[in-house]
Image (tube, rainbow, N blue to C red; front, side, top):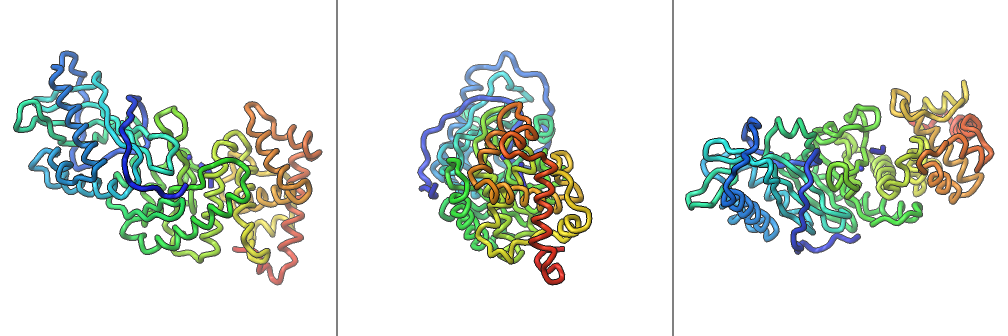
Length: 429
């Protein structure tokens, strides 16, 4: 489902941070309430700003060095729940292979509230070997004066109202304890309820990277971050997913922007918890499908969904024996009784008939590959991904087929492959 190297050591490089405000993809949470947004403090003393920047620098250095004591020394005392959540967050981030990590504040957003100050802070974080560039994440932090003059301590790292207004989306390591497991080119993010499946998921993803690398002609880093939580909280938090019902999806490949409106830093995969305990063939096929989307990247952004998903399905079944390549029973019945009249439309691809649409998309791509060669399928994708491309015209010019012709051929292949099987045993209900 669409939408965003070897594991390296954990030595952290110097921090490079750009201040870019707007919506984000993650935020650090605590138990503090929402801070009302009064007007920015125009006449803030320079020593206050310097003090806040020093506090952020100390915090970033503690994270980079993995120094828990120094990290906690920067937190305001007397907030047990906040301390617990910050310890959890620090433990999470300490498991990640960080290439870059740092903070920067936007001085124009500084607000004074009594002796405390609130300000928009941006976190810059890059996963080593997995992100093409750092991911910049803003949130509103709250600081309170420390015992020494000019020293400030962190009292809150979140403002729920501000986050909602700016479409902040927390990542799993920001919302609760995680368990990180690495493989060759795989960074797996689990939790206490799902870590028992870590070995199987990481191994499956390692194998998927190899299979997909052999099939996809585009350059890509041969690495992927996989979220495999025990609940659907992160999955349902994603916006703009196919079908607008994230919980109904088995998995999603989603992009992470380097900053709001900026270039993509990575494409990651999140699995629905119900897939963790599924049989290996079904789960492996699903992971290959999603890794294909990671490998294809931006090469299918403008292409029709049937082509993007059909290619991912076609790649996902290649390592399977022909008798194990299943399609939904509904797809076989439609092909046998009414035939397939046209290719699935983008707007309705993930509706109640999505199983049929995936099957038709797969076999439309299968026909193209069989009749014209695998290279022609990728050439078709490149052509349809061009700005302003007309998929119907491209089909006719390159293959001499209308979309109806290709759909009919896909339906005939589904019927010939599956309908004659004993009792429909080679398709799934």
